[in-house]
Length: 172
Image (cartoon, rainbow, N blue to C red):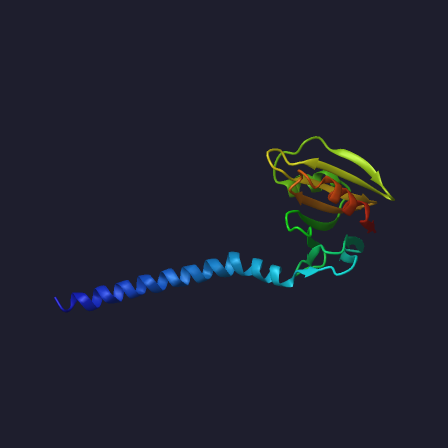
Protein backbone atom coordinates (compact mmCIF):
# COMPACT_ATOMS: atom_id res chain seq x y z
CA UNK A 1 0.00 0.00 0.00
CA UNK A 2 2.77 2.40 0.78
CA UNK A 3 4.16 1.95 -2.73
CA UNK A 4 0.92 3.16 -4.33
CA UNK A 5 0.79 6.39 -2.38
CA UNK A 6 4.12 7.72 -3.67
CA UNK A 7 3.10 6.82 -7.24
CA UNK A 8 -0.32 8.43 -6.80
CA UNK A 9 1.29 11.52 -5.28
CA UNK A 10 3.78 11.67 -8.15
CA UNK A 11 1.00 11.32 -10.70
CA UNK A 12 -1.03 14.10 -9.06
CA UNK A 13 2.05 16.35 -8.93
CA UNK A 14 2.78 15.71 -12.63
CA UNK A 15 -0.83 16.44 -13.59
CA UNK A 16 -0.88 19.62 -11.52
CA UNK A 17 2.41 20.70 -13.08
CA UNK A 18 1.03 20.03 -16.55
CA UNK A 19 -2.04 22.15 -15.81
CA UNK A 20 0.16 25.02 -14.59
CA UNK A 21 2.35 24.81 -17.70
CA UNK A 22 -0.76 24.80 -19.92
CA UNK A 23 -2.19 27.87 -18.14
CA UNK A 24 1.10 29.74 -18.49
CA UNK A 25 1.24 28.86 -22.20
CA UNK A 26 -2.32 30.09 -22.76
CA UNK A 27 -1.55 33.32 -20.92
CA UNK A 28 1.63 33.83 -22.96
CA UNK A 29 -0.23 33.36 -26.23
CA UNK A 30 -3.49 35.19 -25.54
CA UNK A 31 -3.13 37.49 -22.55
CA UNK A 32 0.44 38.80 -22.73
CA UNK A 33 0.09 40.49 -26.16
CA UNK A 34 -3.04 42.32 -24.96
CA UNK A 35 -1.27 43.48 -21.80
CA UNK A 36 1.75 44.67 -23.79
CA UNK A 37 -0.50 46.56 -26.22
CA UNK A 38 -2.49 48.13 -23.37
CA UNK A 39 0.73 49.16 -21.62
CA UNK A 40 2.02 50.84 -24.78
CA UNK A 41 -1.18 52.85 -25.27
CA UNK A 42 -0.74 56.62 -24.96
CA UNK A 43 -3.35 59.30 -24.33
CA UNK A 44 -3.09 62.43 -26.48
CA UNK A 45 -2.73 65.44 -24.18
CA UNK A 46 -3.16 67.71 -27.23
CA UNK A 47 -4.29 67.02 -30.78
CA UNK A 48 -1.72 64.54 -32.05
CA UNK A 49 -0.91 62.95 -35.41
CA UNK A 50 -0.09 59.26 -35.58
CA UNK A 51 2.03 58.48 -38.66
CA UNK A 52 1.86 55.04 -40.27
CA UNK A 53 4.15 53.90 -43.10
CA UNK A 54 4.61 50.86 -45.31
CA UNK A 55 6.05 50.14 -48.77
CA UNK A 56 6.49 53.78 -49.77
CA UNK A 57 3.08 54.94 -48.55
CA UNK A 58 2.15 57.03 -45.55
CA UNK A 59 -0.94 57.87 -43.55
CA UNK A 60 -1.32 60.63 -40.99
CA UNK A 61 -4.10 59.74 -38.57
CA UNK A 62 -5.40 62.32 -36.11
CA UNK A 63 -5.59 61.39 -32.44
CA UNK A 64 -7.67 64.22 -30.95
CA UNK A 65 -6.98 65.43 -27.43
CA UNK A 66 -8.13 62.82 -24.91
CA UNK A 67 -8.08 59.92 -27.37
CA UNK A 68 -5.84 56.94 -26.59
CA UNK A 69 -3.70 55.43 -29.34
CA UNK A 70 -1.09 52.75 -29.91
CA UNK A 71 0.91 51.88 -33.01
CA UNK A 72 1.45 48.16 -33.70
CA UNK A 73 4.34 46.90 -31.59
CA UNK A 74 5.99 45.00 -34.46
CA UNK A 75 5.15 47.21 -37.44
CA UNK A 76 4.53 50.81 -38.46
CA UNK A 77 1.40 50.24 -40.54
CA UNK A 78 -1.24 49.40 -37.90
CA UNK A 79 -2.69 51.35 -34.99
CA UNK A 80 -5.63 51.36 -32.61
CA UNK A 81 -7.41 54.49 -31.42
CA UNK A 82 -9.89 54.64 -28.52
CA UNK A 83 -12.36 57.42 -27.75
CA UNK A 84 -12.03 59.34 -24.46
CA UNK A 85 -14.98 57.42 -22.95
CA UNK A 86 -13.27 54.14 -23.91
CA UNK A 87 -16.36 52.83 -25.70
CA UNK A 88 -15.34 53.39 -29.34
CA UNK A 89 -12.34 51.61 -30.84
CA UNK A 90 -10.95 52.20 -34.33
CA UNK A 91 -8.37 49.76 -35.70
CA UNK A 92 -6.48 50.96 -38.79
CA UNK A 93 -4.12 49.21 -41.21
CA UNK A 94 -2.25 50.98 -44.00
CA UNK A 95 -1.91 48.92 -47.16
CA UNK A 96 -0.99 49.29 -50.81
CA UNK A 97 -3.98 48.20 -52.89
CA UNK A 98 -5.85 48.98 -56.06
CA UNK A 99 -9.02 47.29 -54.75
CA UNK A 100 -10.05 48.99 -51.50
CA UNK A 101 -13.39 47.18 -51.36
CA UNK A 102 -11.65 43.79 -51.42
CA UNK A 103 -9.22 44.93 -48.72
CA UNK A 104 -12.17 46.00 -46.58
CA UNK A 105 -14.00 42.70 -47.17
CA UNK A 106 -10.94 40.72 -46.08
CA UNK A 107 -10.71 42.72 -42.85
CA UNK A 108 -14.45 42.33 -42.20
CA UNK A 109 -14.16 38.56 -42.36
CA UNK A 110 -17.80 38.23 -43.34
CA UNK A 111 -20.67 39.80 -45.19
CA UNK A 112 -20.92 43.57 -45.43
CA UNK A 113 -23.73 45.87 -46.53
CA UNK A 114 -23.35 47.62 -49.92
CA UNK A 115 -20.47 50.09 -49.95
CA UNK A 116 -20.95 53.84 -49.80
CA UNK A 117 -18.35 56.16 -51.33
CA UNK A 118 -17.80 59.71 -50.17
CA UNK A 119 -15.17 62.27 -51.15
CA UNK A 120 -13.33 63.60 -48.12
CA UNK A 121 -10.70 66.21 -48.92
CA UNK A 122 -8.31 64.74 -51.50
CA UNK A 123 -9.30 61.18 -50.62
CA UNK A 124 -12.31 58.92 -50.97
CA UNK A 125 -13.87 57.08 -48.04
CA UNK A 126 -15.36 53.68 -48.87
CA UNK A 127 -17.40 52.20 -46.03
CA UNK A 128 -20.00 49.57 -45.13
CA UNK A 129 -21.43 47.89 -42.06
CA UNK A 130 -20.50 44.34 -41.08
CA UNK A 131 -23.69 42.28 -41.32
CA UNK A 132 -24.84 41.12 -37.89
CA UNK A 133 -22.37 43.32 -35.98
CA UNK A 134 -22.39 46.87 -34.63
CA UNK A 135 -19.26 47.75 -36.61
CA UNK A 136 -18.33 49.91 -39.58
CA UNK A 137 -15.51 48.86 -41.92
CA UNK A 138 -14.01 50.90 -44.68
CA UNK A 139 -10.98 52.57 -46.13
CA UNK A 140 -9.63 56.03 -46.78
CA UNK A 141 -8.33 55.69 -50.33
CA UNK A 142 -5.83 57.82 -52.22
CA UNK A 143 -4.14 56.51 -55.36
CA UNK A 144 -2.96 52.95 -54.81
CA UNK A 145 -3.01 53.26 -51.02
CA UNK A 146 -5.73 52.63 -48.47
CA UNK A 147 -6.00 53.06 -44.75
CA UNK A 148 -8.44 50.25 -43.91
CA UNK A 149 -10.41 50.74 -40.69
CA UNK A 150 -12.81 48.90 -38.41
CA UNK A 151 -14.82 50.98 -35.95
CA UNK A 152 -16.79 49.51 -33.04
CA UNK A 153 -19.48 50.27 -32.01
CA UNK A 154 -21.12 52.02 -34.93
CA UNK A 155 -24.27 53.05 -33.10
CA UNK A 156 -23.95 56.46 -31.48
CA UNK A 157 -20.43 57.15 -32.74
CA UNK A 158 -20.96 58.14 -36.38
CA UNK A 159 -20.09 61.81 -35.75
CA UNK A 160 -16.82 60.93 -34.01
CA UNK A 161 -15.89 58.50 -36.78
CA UNK A 162 -16.71 61.07 -39.49
CA UNK A 163 -14.55 63.67 -37.74
CA UNK A 164 -11.68 61.21 -37.39
CA UNK A 165 -11.86 60.10 -41.05
CA UNK A 166 -11.95 63.71 -42.29
CA UNK A 167 -8.54 64.33 -40.71
CA UNK A 168 -6.79 61.30 -42.25
CA UNK A 169 -4.30 61.95 -45.04
CA UNK A 170 -3.02 59.05 -47.14
CA UNK A 171 -0.13 59.61 -49.59
CA UNK A 172 1.75 57.29 -51.89
